Length: 344
Ligand code: KG4
Ligand code: ZN
Image 1 (cartoon, rainbow, N blue to C red):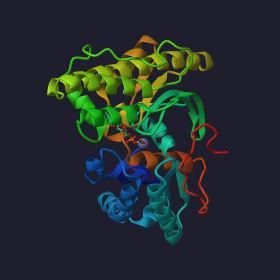
Image 2: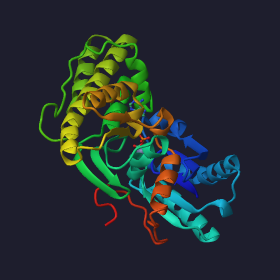
Image 3: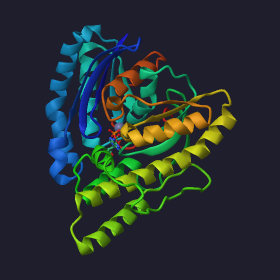
Image 4: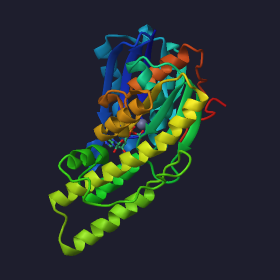
C-alpha cells in the first residue's frame, strides 16, 4: 500500500510517499522562510500564494524521486486543517482533484494527528502512549489511544511554546524561524544569567501558559537596552535562560501527566514528543531523563520529521486508510480542528 501525503497548512509546502511497511519512498519539503523572513513571521496571504505556486512542482518531484505514477498509489492524504485557511485550501483542492481524476480514495488528515502519529512511522510504538505535542500553533498533552481517539490532558491557555520561541527570537532580533535560532544562540549562553518566571510550574493539572514568560523577557530586554544595545552575549544568555525555562515548565507539566497516564494505563510505556519544538535538543534530553526516571521509554521523530513535512500526513493517511477511515470529497478545509473527539 502506497499513500501520498500533501502538507500546506503553514509555511511548508510538502509532499511525501510512504508505504504501509514504513518505507519512505520520497519526501520533499519546500520552506517559505525567504518569503516571510523580512516580516519576522508567517504572513497568511503570502503563504497561500506561495503554496499555490509550489504545490504542483513539489508533487511532481516527490513522484519522480519515488519513481511512482498516480496509478501506483492506494490513496491520497492531505492536511485538512487546522492551519492557515488559504494554505490548507490549496492542499485540499489539489488532493481532491488528484483523487477525482485518478479515482483514488481521499483521506483528510488533521495536521495535529500527523504530528501525533509520526513516531509510529519511525519507531515501534504501540497505542496507548503519552504525547507532548509542541509546535508553533499548538501545545498540548494527550493520551493517544488510536487514530482519531485522543484524550486531552492539558493545553495552553494563551501562547504555544513554539510561538514563544518565535516571539522571543523576534525581540532578540536573531532571525526567523525563531526556534532553531534561539537554540543556536543558547548554545553559547549562560542559562542562569536571567531569572525568568516559570508559569504554571508546581500547579495541579497539565495546562500551560507562556505569555507571561514572553512579557518577562521583553521587560528584561528593555532594561538592558536602557544602558546599551544588546550584545551578542546578552542575546545568547537570554536565549539560554529562556530555553531552560521552557524546558523546565514542559517537564513539570509532563510530570503530572505521567501520573494520570500511569493510573489509567499501568502497562503502557511510551512518552513521545512531537511537533516543531520537539526538534529542540535540550527539550529532548530533559524528556529522555524524565521518561527514564518514570520507567518509561522516550521516543521522538528524527529532527527533520519534527517540523512540518509530508511524511507525517502520508503516514497518518496509511493509519486511517487501513482502518477504512477515508473522507468524502465534500470535506471542507478547517481553520480549527481539535484532536479530541475529532471524528465526531
Ligand atoms: O510543527 P511546526 O513545523 O509547525 C506547526 O505545526 O506549527 O512547528 C514550528 C514551530 C516554530 O514555532 C518553530 O520556532 C519551532 O517549531 N521550532 C523549534 C525548533 N525548531 C522548530 N523550537 C525550538 N527549538 C527548535 N530547534
Ligand atoms: Zn505542525
